[in-house]
Length: 619
Image 1 (cartoon, rainbow, N blue to C red):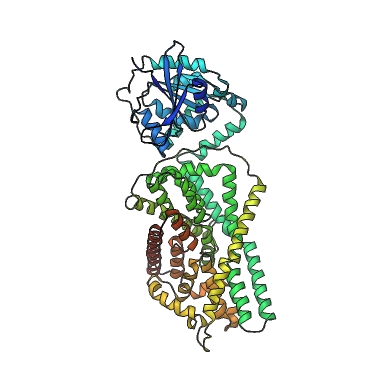
Image 2 (cartoon, rainbow, N blue to C red):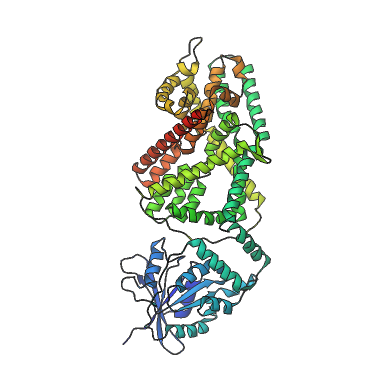
């Protein structure tokens, strides 16, 4: 006696598969595990209209036939007849969410390409109609070449029509894959475009909000226009970091200058005055003045997230990331790393493949975090002229944009090398739900900016303050004889002289050598360290004491040295917190050690190449 035909219930997560499975099988269900896999197997029986029994298996939700998790691997293996102890399905019921048609059609179109008999269950049709969406199922059926049945699983609507269509699809239950048919890999963006075009053809009418979303997506997700728009948005963002922040940054600088002058006037010359004026005010103040730039950067990020555009940016970047061996799921952790690498590395826990996750962890520090911004803006403000390249495009903003692009490019090159060597493997694409476009809630944006300001000021009042005071102490003692620079005679000066022997070939001077070691606590400390050392040296020079840090740097450093310093901070892993969280997430010191080693090596080579090329060019 032949066993009952096997029918597989398949679809995206949250399409209503389990509700449909329960509605069809009732209490006649069995739960177990697939052989050799800790993935639950739900199966049950029901009868077709002609009385034939059918075994129905509810497969785990999946986005693609290219699995990114054990659940998705089981779904693929069952559908292709490769799962141990499982028969090849006689037919598939593909459950599609009617209110999210274009996203769910992607997987359905892949399944139809296999050549198996298929019935589409267009589920949750009532919710789609409630939202003003009307779908012509006859158009879908004609274009897909398979029956399409409207269902509402939770209300058991459309079940008899579904069983009737399935009876014709199952036939005698002996159908195998048709000759010449099978799974063929297609680019994710190509499948998405085909699915969206079909969805638009089948939709008779929709609400104005849905029409607006689809119209904008036609531009924002265009294979050519989309990346251009994304690059333009990033370019405008970095232009604004300089142009919009000038007034508030200058105001903050004036307040710290006035505070330092008041302390110098009120306190007698001595250790206490130097500690407060040169250590606390000059050091911490040199970092806090960059708060406006950081808030402007996060203003753009918060608006892009709240508007629904950030997910579109993830989709646009997915194809490029796949070419260098990165998983599409790496985008969100890497995006988080633009704020700080620590939460970015922790966010890699959502990546299933261990090598995908490890690769993402190892390149996350290359994303230009907000801690680099004070260093970038200080050096750019001191050495790059504040002039327009073309009307509306400032040279300083252009250089900042290029530094961010250099970090991204470095991360992609590092991923390409790592995926072909120590973390060998191939990245996989990922599916994502596109939220509707909406105006940001300015209350939420304001709250987000307030949170970022609090985090930044807390770092300034803890890590940066402690490191700056420690550096002040090391740079202030022992006292230098008259005519000798304090920064060179002090304990810190002697340590810096040792460091300088290593970094002199790449153009770094004594000032930079003194800043590199304390900057390991946090990248912003590099600015505080330089400001503190210059403030200590300025005590013996009344003219220098009134000179702003940017002006002192522009006179003290040659341009090739400044450019090499920028190149160093694009790649160098100068953040103890990042190293610590990498150790925790990888359960040992092997990979943090590897990460620090390769990033310092890349930073050294990049800084040296920048310095010598700039020198040869006569800059």
